[in-house]
Image 1 (tube, one colour):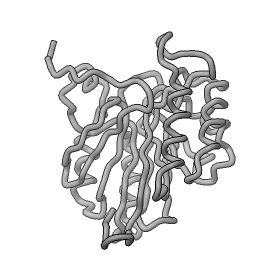
Image 2 (tube, one colour):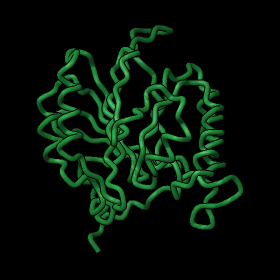
Image 3 (tube, helix red, strand yellow):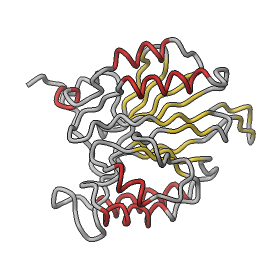
Length: 236
C-alpha cells in the first residue's frame, strides 16, 4: 500500500486473517478457547475500520477439526464481513467440506484437486496456493502445484502480486513449528526469486506475527484470530 498525501490513498488496504480454528458455536478448542467467538469479535472490529479494507484474505486452518458443522459456523460468521474475502485451506481443513460449504464462491476451483486460484480484479493480483498435504501437519508444494504457479506468474507478469499460502516457506526459529513447515521450500524459492512482481507472501500456521525478507520478497505470517503460539526459541 502507498499513501500519496493526507486523505489520498493509492493501492489496496488488505486485512489478513489466519488460523481461526473455528469450532461449533458453544464449543471450545482445547476445551478453553472460544475460537468462534474470537472470530466474531475480529470481524466486528474490521467492519468498524475507517477506511475499510478492500479485501480480507484468510490463510488457512479455517476450522478446528474440518467438520461439516464447523464450516457451517464459519460460513455464518464470515457472512457478516462487509469486505469480500478470499480463503485457502490449512492442515486442519478438509478440501471437500470446504468446497461444499462455500460452493457459491466463484473463485474456488471445482474440478481441480487443489484449492488454488488467481484473482485479477484488484490493483494487486492475488495468487492463492494450496500447501495442504492431507493427513500431515506439514505442508508441501508438489510438482503439479509448482508448475501451476509458474504458469500463472508468466501471465501478465508485470502486475504486482501477492501470494497467499498456509505454511510459511522460511524457518521461524520456533523449532517444533519449523518441523511442520513447508517441506520443499527451496523449489518454491527458485520460482519466487525469478519473479520480481511478487511483492508480498502472506502465510499462517505459526499463530504469530513474523516479518522477514525471503528470496527477494517480503513475507509475513499472521497471528491467529484466537489462540497464539508461544515464542519458544530454545531448541529443546
